[in-house]
Image (cartoon, rainbow over all chains, first blue to last red; front, side, top):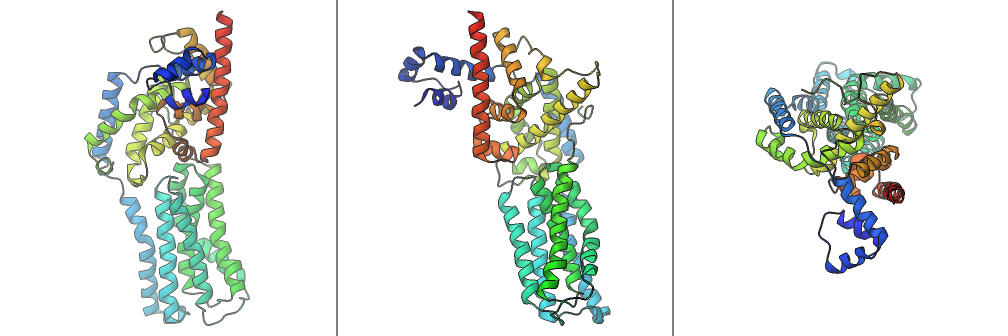
Length: 251
Length: 176
């Protein structure tokens, strides 16, 4: 074992073996390293009074807010509400639903799955990289599904900007909610995932109505809107992270 | 952890007992004073209680806890710096100016030198050293807490240790 590793791995805590101790006794570098590690760890913990105060405040907060997951549960149901609303509209105004039946059923389900994956990654503050990759996978699968399940007109739209702004508009409200969550994590990647989750709702809502399913149209308007929301989420989290430290908030 | 998430106060007590000393030490080293460490400890654990439903129970608790703690410490340091620049004498001074509590350390001169050297380290180096040292977080765990890679965190910790060793060696040389 190298000198540096001796202090590094023991962190000045575990008793040294006879062989290690003999080495330390004759090595100025090791002595200094161990002294540094022990000095860094020195010091007492919080006082008993603080322990008591903090526990009481935490218990009070836990009782006041038994779980606090109602918002998460509410948001989880949003895409299902969008789907139900779409089915309801289909019954009332079938002329608004321009897609063939199999596309109506398949694509929205995939987009809702993309939303759920993104929401899942968003709710665990910055610590689920696997969830993030799954959310991105949802975007890829959702886009592929849109491309392979054609609408009635597989061509370029004469007014591409409409779809872009419509997606952004439908996604605005969920985006605000997700941004409020994402900024707590202060992680730009989580902000991006928040944008993707919000975008999934917009893309899903629009997909029922948009008659144009040409690849160029989908990739330059629907997908661009989705990715714009992801980029916006990431940038806004960098620019406006939540400040956790609020003097005077602690009891 | 599941019990804590579902609101079991005893589960919170157990988590608090396990992490209180290490986290308090982390704050003391990051912020430089015992009073600031007390405040930051409270803010962090209350935030943990508030955000518990967003914790993924398949993950380890410690990196999550330290991600919150690191944000709290960074905010505190930024706020202190702003106030110092603004000349607000009523607020606690920065880590560099705060002498450690004499009851905490066996050798006050060494403790003061160490705290000064720590305060002079770049923030990223300091948090890597302190997280690794005080609660024995592994480099992958620290990387999760600071949203970086294990390799980058290891480099920061090594460089931080190197600078601290130099500071301590200088102190030893000066005492002879």
